[in-house]
Image 1 (cartoon, helix red, strand yellow):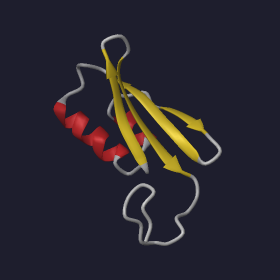
Image 2 (image 1 turned 180 degrees about the vertical axis):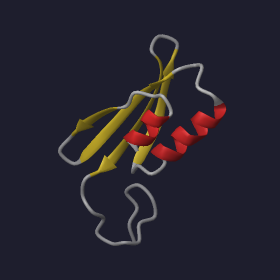
Image 3 (image 1 turned 90 degrees about the horizontal axis):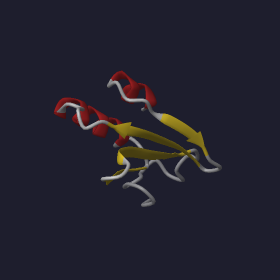
Image 4 (image 1 turned 120 degrees about the vertical axis):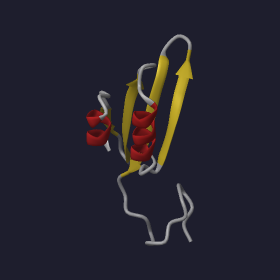
Length: 82
């Protein structure tokens, strides 16, 4: 995921936590629509993702990937297992 974001010209930061890895990157106003689409496809692979945006700090795209393996192979989205 971080490699895909880097290939788009972004500078992702990874941080290890006890149960997940977080990835954050600032998104410039000049990012083309196609690159936005690719960035969203990349973070959509995470367990959780989002965008923080405000007039003071700009836009930060973030994602979190759980370190553990799901209890079953049939997962219906973040925190929803059958």
